[in-house]
Image 1 (cartoon, rainbow, N blue to C red):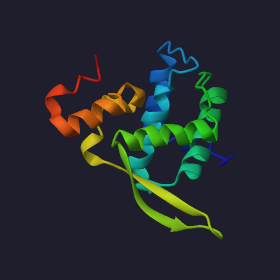
Image 2 (image 1 turned 60 degrees about the horizontal axis):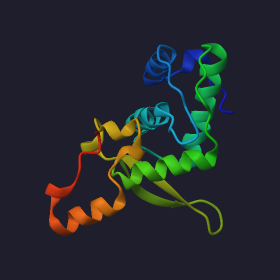
Image 3 (image 1 turned 180 degrees about the vertical axis):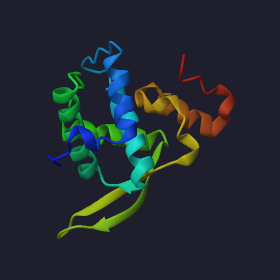
Length: 152
């Protein structure tokens, strides 16, 4: 879509391709694609802020290059799946809305940026591993001591 060639891959994308090619990741129906979170983190580190449709187009182009030129089989998410992933990242406080910019008519773009404190979080690989919402609510009421470890 964006006309990228293999010579125009960004450094973090090359690392994702190398890591994905060397692993045997099975992406089932409910298992998130761990490369999406890593790609979003690298992209936002590089550009600062972006809106979901622009990120998805670049992700789609990256997957096309990786799958054709480098013979890896990175699953390409639909735009709907990609926005759900962004929503999960936002709910886990890994990214936040930086501004809302006008587009056309009544449509506004939400621009997202990284939360610097969460760059090294394990939740980038699987944001669904965070504690359930009821546990987060419980922790807010009665303190952090009752919140279980999301990594176990």
